[in-house]
Amino acid sequence: MKNIFGGLLLVALLCVAPMHAQSPVDQAAQAGFPMLTEFTLQPGAQPFTFSYTAQADGPHRMIVAWGATVALLLEVHGAGPDPSSGQGNPASVPFPAKKGVTYTIRISPAGNLPVTSVGQLYGGLRRSQAMTQVSGELVKATPMPLPGPAAPEATPMPLPGPQPAMKPLPMSVVNKLTAPVDWAATLKTVSAIPAMGQLLSSLPGGVAGTMQQGNENEIRVRAPTVPESTGALDWRTGLAFRSWSEPPAYYLNGKKYYVGALEAFPVELVSYPTRVTDQAKEILRIWPWPRGLVYLDLELPAENATYAITVRTSDAQGTLRSTWAAGDPPIVSLKCDRPWMAAAHQSIYLPLTVTSGPSGFSTLITVSPPDTPTYADSWGGGKGMRKVNLMLTLAYETVVGASNFKAPALFGGIDIKRIN
Image (cartoon, rainbow, N blue to C red; front, side, top):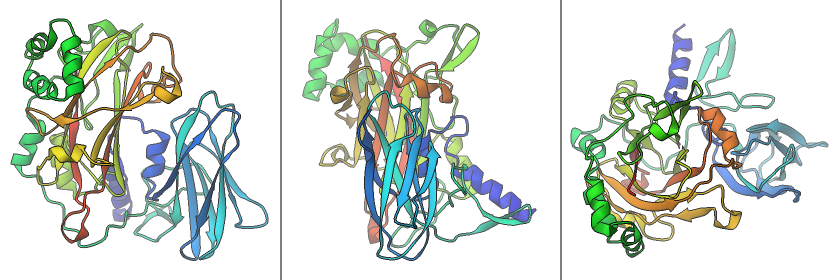
């Protein structure tokens, strides 16, 4: 019984935000294998192939996933007379490997692919770790079962150098990440970016007018009640998206829909009391090794509008530097995907500047999402959303600290406010 409880606790700790449905990509990432490569598949094009050379003898596994609703066919060639294969989203294939032998990984859509889609391939050696006794059988504890002959085993992410124990965050750090957003001060700071200043000047009333609007509300806002329609959500007041809280929502024809879905990985597993404290403060510890990612899918009003975005973040000591948003690649970046646009123009990287109020970065974006469905709407249903017409990806690249230790980044949520 003790072992069963320990396994269940580990499963609970591995779940990032239990209120939010996980995407297939998140499920695959949480299986504990490193990402080998990203890939792109086009309608009617040839399958994607990847050469994988085993670094050791033993049982290996490949896992493939993407955000498209079409299942994937995953094949491993070279592990025997016939290829090992699996199908699903994610799809998982175990195989025995020999050190130094190169295997060909073949990935193709298992059905009709309507649009060009991007996925991720994970894989490697299945390493042993603590096991949990369940129903008389020894099984590995995993955050979520994946399709395939056997569920992949959760593997701890290897980190070089000494790994200090996680401690409760100092209140000074917590206060920085949870401070109210001063939207007027934030817009003034953002206007210092030439492109953003030009955008603000082009809005009705110019920079001064938008800053006056930004001062209407200087506290963190969540929707206290669920509106009866999409129009009742007040984007001008501001909406907050947090890892541990139910996102803002509305009712339509008697059914409840969220206007956002927030997901993050990989997340540091800390001791249970510390995790409770982090949860109470709406803070996640994200490992930027090899890369930390936060996804926010959104349903914005179907009309032309400009929004201010504030990302709450710092390092584990509460430090934030403007230089993190510079460089090639930057340590912190924010990408916006607009699924209604042509593939060549869907993704843009938003310029970031240090915000005023909470520790983090802010930016602006003007969008005109249509009311008609896009291919992104199809995966919103699994997250409790009616549609998805904008996607934000916050990326943390590796930050090397003392003794080559990869310190975790702290993430406190995303605030969005319409300013026109």
